Length: 463
Image 1 (cartoon, rainbow, N blue to C red):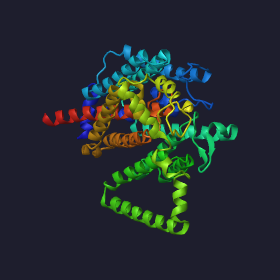
Image 2: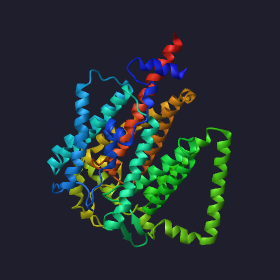
Image 3: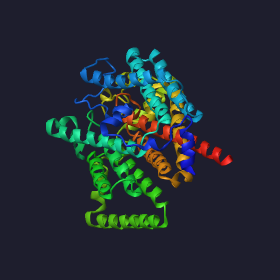
Image 4: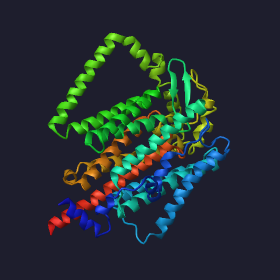
């Protein structure tokens, strides 16, 4: 029945036919969907990533970053302007409108920003990114991709970036790692690649593929271990905890598929609890706690390594100035002169709020934060609604839609949780920013196709 509905939709505006599942070559995939190229970042082989918002200086690496986005955005604009018609469901249109509205709020914030040019430039980069995402949604609505390949292509990008980080360790380790007292060696990736995100992506996608048999089990296990080790190498709780929680979500979803899966999942949980108990007994609870808290004091943990002081400053400032500080440049400039009593760090070295949601608040005020929260909520609710369509599981075509929506939603949950500890998910020219928006684009486009196929299915049943 679902295949019949999909064939009906293929004759209409949505190309959901069997040709949508043709697997492309590695290079052919990027030629067909260049928005995925943005997920590379690209790597910037220097310690101070991005444009210096306080001085407005631009170097060769910044030009490379902007150039990649410019090329992809130029193609997207050209294809959108030459399209005979643009047809996507209203639910997805409303979400895109919220994203563009947020970009316009960022652009307006340039008026009162301490650096008008920098704020306006970043706002334009934000809007260009969403133009690329919108073109992807419009494109795949007419001619869907191989959805499983989309997941694996994101994982392949993460693997390539991980390889670049490892190579950089041998060439210039200071760019990607640091040695911190109490923590030891921390491989963060910095400007080359966000190690926490890419390793967690490798682990989560591999775990999902293992549970649902999307690839050979041996490959999934190997890549899961690689992602797990890479995540631990960051020595960052804000990376480790979200990754663990998302792996639990993958397991819970798999446990619901059958009684055998549920029994095995419960057995693994009980085994993990027993194993942890043995480890605590042998090693000692105190040593384990000191390893986990990186030797921090209770005050440092309570203040999230001083981040709560940054967030308090932003909230107090925005209560007096509801419009915010100005996109990107505002916080970097205003906070550098902030000297609160008892501050645990030098404010001159802080360039972001270390929280994606607080960063949006600082950039363009309370209205922008409200729009951003509505945008994310609508994306999650829409994806969750169509991921639960049980009739999708009646065919391989339909199940691929379920898998890509569910796995993308879990990856988005990771982005949101990790975003509580970092601002990269809302800062243009960062791989994390592009990856989160690409995931949103995947959820929206796959949900749009499920919606269209569902309408065609009900229409065929009515006849």
